[in-house]
Image 1: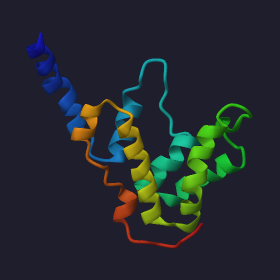
Image 2: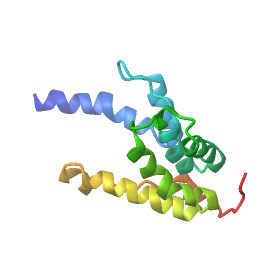
Image 3: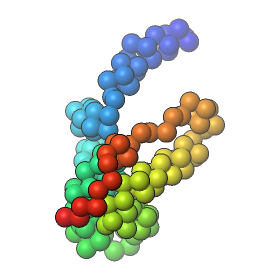
Amino acid sequence: MPEYFISKLESVVLPVFHSIQTLDDLVAYVETRPIPYRHFEIDELRGVSLHAARGDLETARAKLDDLRHGRSLWCIPSFAEAEVASVVEPLGPLLDKGDRAGIAQQLAAWEAMRIAKLPKGFARIWEPTPFPVEAEPERSQLP
C-alpha cells in the first residue's frame, strides 16, 4: 500500500507541483481544473491580496476600492465584516502608499500565520514565498 501511494505522488501530484512556479501559474491551474461544485474566481477579497502579491497594485487597489465602498458580495451586512476588515485594514494603507516592502511583509506575516496553524510537519518543509511585489523596485505611483 505505501508503494502505491508513493507511486501516485510521484506520477500525479509532483508533476502538478513542478508545473506551478508562479502565482499566475497557480491561478491558471485552478481555473482550468475546477474543484467540483466550486468555481474559482478572483473576487474582491482574494483579489486584493493576490494582485498585491503579483505586484499589480493598480488592480489590487481597484478590488480594495470595491470592498471599501460596498461594491462586493463580501460587503453584505452581517456576512463577512471580519474577513473584509482583516484584509482592508492591514493591506489598504500599504496599497494606498504603494509601499511594496510593507505589502510583502504583510503577505509574509499572513503566510507564516497560516503555516503555524497547520500540523507541525508542514513548518519543517515550508519555505517563505518570494512574492513578486518585493522583486520590483519601489514606486510611489498612485492611480
